[in-house]
View 1 (cartoon, rainbow, N blue to C red):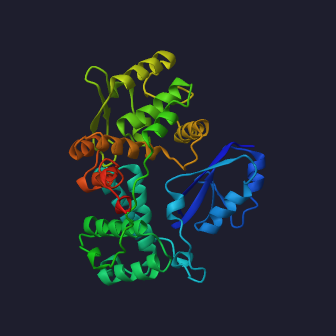
View 2: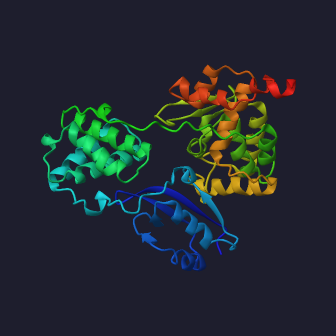
View 3: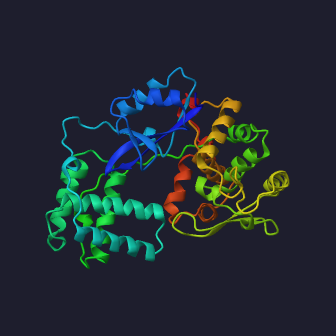
Length: 377
C-alpha cells in the first residue's frame, strides 16, 4: 500500500474539483474507486471528485486505518465550502466555443505569452475567459456589456458559490481580454465583490523550527528544508535554484524570475553556506542545486512535501505544517529580531508593504510586553 496521497483543488472542464494523486498501487486504486462520483482524468493523470466537504471527508474515511498519510495541498482545508445541492450549475449546459471564439481565445493566449506571463497564469486566464465566452456563446462579443458581466457574476459565480478568489480571477481575465482583443473597456468595479478573508500566517516557534531542520540525517533533505527557512523561499523558488544562483563570496542567494517574474536576492548565513558545501561534496549536483533521481531534472515537489512530512513525524510535531509555514516563520522571526519591515519586504519579494505588514500581527515581540489587566486584580 502507498505511504501517502495528495489532495488539491483545481479546474476540470471549467468546474472546480478535488484532485487525488498517488503513486500507482492496485490496492489504493480499488479503494479510490469505491468513492461516489470519482473519475479518472486521462489528461490530468489524476483522480477527481466533486468540490465539497463531503467528498474530502469520504476520501479521508476511505483511507482511514490503512496507514496512508493524506497531504492536502494549496489550502484545500481552507477553501472547500459546502455547495447548495439544489442550485443548478450553468456549466452543466454550457455549449462549446465556436471557431470565431476559439480564434479570439488563441489571440488572447498569444498576447499573454508575448507579455511573458507565466504558463500557470496563462492557463488560469484562458480557462476563465473560456468559461465566460461559453456562457454567452450565442451572443456576439461586440454586444457584451457591463450588464452581462454583472449578470454572469450573479447567475454563475455567486449562484454556484464559487470563492472570492475565483470571482476575481474570472473578472480580471474578462477585463483584460476585452481591453486587449476587443479594444473595449468593461468596468468590473461595478460588481459588488465580497470582502476577502484576512487570515493570519501560520508561524512555528524557533524551537519547533530547530526540531524540524535537525530531524533528518540525510544531508540533502536537511539542506532543502534549512534553505527554505533560512532565506524565506517559496517551494518553487527552492526547486528552481541552480548552482550559479548561490553567490558564496557575497553571501547571497539569487532568486530568479520568481512570483511576478521578479528577480531578487536573499542573504545567506555562513551557517547555511557550510551546510550547502557539505551537501555539494556529498551529491555533486550538475545544474540544479537540488536534482531529481536522474540528475537531469529538478527535485520533485511531491517528494519535497514528503521530506517535510517525515521531518514532522520524526520531531513529533502534530500541527498541519506545510512548506510555506517555514517562509512565514522566517519572516516573523526576522521581525522579532528587530529587522526593518522594508528589508523583510525586499527579501520576501512582496510587491506591497501591506503584504509584509501582516507579520506584525503574529509577532510576539511587542504583544508579550502587554500586561493583562487580569494580573492586576
